[in-house]
Image (cartoon, rainbow, N blue to C red):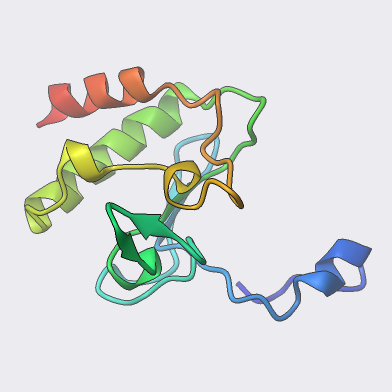
Amino acid sequence: MNNLDCRDHPYFAEIADTPVSAHIFIDREGKITQYVPFNKRAWHAGASEFMGRQRCNDYSIGVELEGCDDQPYTDEQYMQLAALTVVLMRQWPAITRNNIVGHCHIAPDRKTDPGPTFDWKHYFDLLEQSV
């Protein structure tokens, strides 16, 4: 939202000029906020590669979940993520279970999210129930 005060922490000054955005953010309560239209490029992946194709920001939809690597995500986040995924899959049939991945998969040297506490099986089970 471009309102991070870079004086609040030395690290913030280091990343001040780094473009970062996501299409969607899902908070711990399951509230969804859209920051970038789905048909526009977001800057969520950075240097990345998926199935031999680089620059994932050019062709992917970035969803960020509030959390960290060592804290489990909430049921509300999983439910909203699955519901959102169904909508996206209906709009863009090229989105399939086989090409839904985390930042940790497309930029493993730089990114860890959604992290080891993300329950992929639970998410995909919810997705299957919703389709």
